[in-house]
Image (cartoon, rainbow, N blue to C red; front, side, top):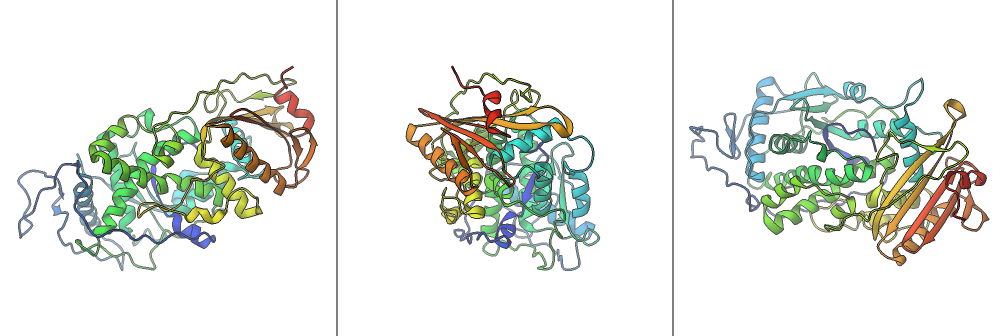
Length: 484
């Protein structure tokens, strides 16, 4: 997807509404006590006196249920910011049942400064191997086309959506605002990022197991990490106005304009999947065994988005692959896992949804995105053509270099049953049909014009569907020769 950065709070729902995708209203249950399994918070006396030692539910001079004098209409002063953060930390402790080990500093960034720091992959000069490799991944998903830079599209989408982030290397929250001279912080953003700070203090988020070599692994781990943060954020929202007074955010305050090229809906929906399915995943863990079960999950994070979407322990089916390309076609061996990426069930769902919504492809009903389950679920990523996923490996290929380079890919997908494989192939063929693909030979199709103008060979053998892509039909046998 992109090189991993800090853990973020994504203000996606509003952007999807603006783009014409309705976000379901959240109807949380009534205020409740902390979930079982975590340590019980201390109880303040009537005067909210400070405890003799640091206790759960009290931080830096403030109890979780203590009133504070903070008003954001004219921005936050340094003293107000410290007070606001201290009580929010106490509230995260109360909900999460876990103690912060140290105070969490907050830095305010303008959105322009954030864009400059995060950077895109656009610009002049030779594009890196990673950028060219990743372009093929997003083109295979029919989200960005041949003339589009996937890195810039990802950067523009993130820049428009990110409200704040926690940088594990800096041990600091960075809040993005359009008014850095008089900053305001949304309660949800602050609580969300404080959960990431707590996770880092407890689990060390810089460990390799919280990274991921493939797009699917990154999204799966984010389902745990971001799901935890979003779940606590929702639990916090349930208390606001019911049991707790919460600091209001002025309506005029926001993150400022996104700038850049604006959000790509396919990328946006992919990035948002952990924030949507993750809280449901965490809620299920908490219901089964309290916060100790979540702690155990952080020891062994989920391996695929399938596990997060369906709350299953099924492991991906191993896929063996041997490169047999000819006539100068080669993989990108330094990228991904030996040159391959795994896009996973969530990204496949987005492919089918995005093409249905933008081109009318007969893949899934795009309205099914709103078929949600319960107060912690925002969007639905479960659909027939992507369910039954067993594994996939996508190998981008290149021939030549510089401006004369040509590109293609081999995408091997494995499914639980032959019926699942047939349904995936049917829906994929529907995408080709809506792109005006012409059949040139058995299982071979050519899209003659447009952003996805290429040749495709789509074959099924049992539970496996293999897609070979190249500039022309003649290139397909060079990229992946047919077995004799």
